[in-house]
Amino acid sequence: MIDDDTHSRLELLQQNKLLIHELFQLEQDGHKDARELYHDEIAGFFIRTDDGSFTLSSDKRESGDSETLHSKYGAFSESYEKFVKPSNLLEIAQHKKSIRVLDICSGIGYNTTALLTYLKDEDVEIEIDMVESSIETLATILFIPDVSKAYSYVKKEVETYLIDKGYLQFNKVLSTVPSNIHINIHVCDAREFIKNEAHGKYDAVFLDPYSPSKSPELYTVDFFSRIKQFLEEYSLILTYTAASPVRSALVHAGYHLGEGPSFHRSGGTIASLSQDMITTPLSFSDEKVIALSDVGVPYIDPELNDDYDTIVNRRRSTREKIRGVSVFPSSSKLPRYIGLDPESIEDVNLREKLNGYVNAMGFESINDYRIHDILNIDPNLSSRDQILALEDNLHRILG
Image (cartoon, rainbow, N blue to C red; front, side, top):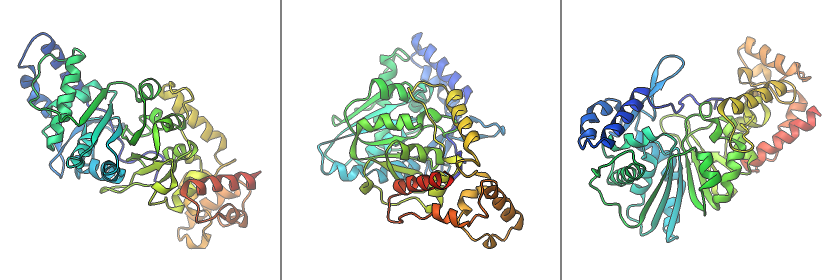
């Protein structure tokens, strides 16, 4: 687990966006064949993943390399494994007449499609709120090959939305959405949706924004706190990210949390208001990083309206003030080593560096008896309660 996820969600290529807007204009002008004319150009951005489903080329990173929006091992399979299967929605559907799901940053619709495919044999009403801020990403769904019959339902709802909003004119998706499926599309900032449009209770939340470093506004203590009013006690929030500030924000917003399933790369995070819904706790090593170091400082957005720079700079300023003062510095992965016998670290330079960090805070070494006092917590506590206990012990020791 690192501060920023290695496999970040990235932005749609600018060229893709421009093509979508050209398409909109042509169809608004009455060109019935506009989608056919643009199909091959837009499809040129699609990348086939190992399970046969598609993802999109991303905008470039600072390194200059373009990546993909999903795992190369299987975009659709990733939705199944990381969001749908661990959601408990199959079990819930067998005991309720209806279920409701909030799909935040729904992207190209794979999470929603995976859910509909997963529940296709269940006699249950399904309502999904798809929240996506990019109209271009939403429109791109119309050109992606179907990954299952349910994808045609998503396409039909997307087309209907785009026609209703005046972006398109013509009905071309030949699909009828089953009467038990209700897909509500919302093109907006997810914070605005939570503040002004969300209602009722959700049985699960799929949280799939770009990485915390790109979309910190959707990983704040305040955003998670606001979502709580729309959850049942058993509901799960599922996200692909394992970043420390995200997990810290969930803890301080009042959630219990644990490891999400891995899919050819690091696991994600599962959170719930009920400890009983968490089956795989975090490792003690991860808990130390979150509770005891500056990496664990969460993002804050009190009114759910701050811009990117304000949110990022607020966290950066806090980290700078407390690093090496009231929390351990995250440098050289120090939090993972505290409490260990220094002699067990074969790299002498690393050993000296780690001891130097804790020396500056008044400790003799990384296994100072006071550090062991900090780490002395009840191992039977939930991950959330262990993190809070570690924080309390650290503050008590450092005074």
